[in-house]
Length: 242
Ligand SMILES: [Zn+2]
Image 1 (spheres, protein in one colour):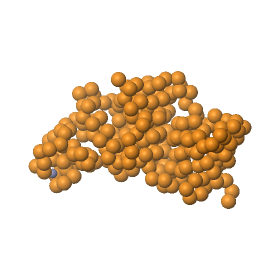
Image 2 (cartoon, rainbow, N blue to C red; image 1 turned 90 degrees about the vertical axis):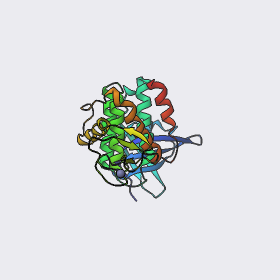
Image 3 (tube, protein in one colour; image 1 turned 60 degrees about the vertical axis):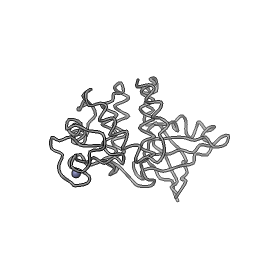
Image 4 (cartoon, rainbow, N blue to C red; image 1 turned 60 degrees about the horizontal axis):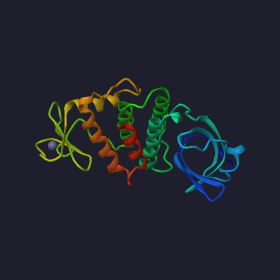
C-alpha cells in the first residue's frame, strides 16, 4: 500500500528504544491514529523537529489497524510563540491530551480538527484565557456527543427556563422537581455555554467572573466523566493558572 499524505496534529509522543518514536496523531482525514516513526530520534532528515507535541504537520503515513507507520513529516506550524510561555504550553498540552483521551481511534472528526486548529491559533496569538479554554471544552464535548443538555432536565425533560439547574455527579443537569441534590448552576451559566455553541469563533464570548466557578465545575466534571483516566496535563494547567 502506498503511503498516504495526511494533515495532523501531534498529540503525544513516546520514545521507543534508542532511536524510534511512537506518536499519537489527530489527523484531518482519519481522526486519531497511533503511528510508529522509525529512526525519529536520530533521523533529522526525515522528521526534523516535526514530531513534537502540538506541532501541526503534513505527513506520509502507511495506514494500518493498530499502529500505522510514518514515513516522513514536515512542520506546518510549530507554534513558536506558545512554546516561549509556560501557561501557553500548559494549555496546548491540555488541549492535546483532552482530544486524545476523549476521541475514539480511526473516526474522522473534521469539525473537532478545525476546533483544535482554531484553539492553537488562538493560543499562538493571544495569552491563554479561561474563556477560550471553556469555549474549547464545551465545543469539544458537543462535537463528540458528550455535552449535557443545557435546555432541559435530563430526567423529566422539562425546560430549565429561568430556574436553576442542578449538576449531578454523572454530568447530567436536572431540575429541582426531580431532585434537590447536586450543585446549582444558574441560568447565566447555561446561557454562556449555549452561546459558546452558537459561534464558531474564539474571542467573541467572554466568561463573566461571577459564573467562572460554576461553568468550570460543569466542564471539569464532564471531562472527568468521559475521560477514562486522569489527565496529566490538568495538574500542570492548574499550577500555571493560579
Ligand atoms: Zn426534571
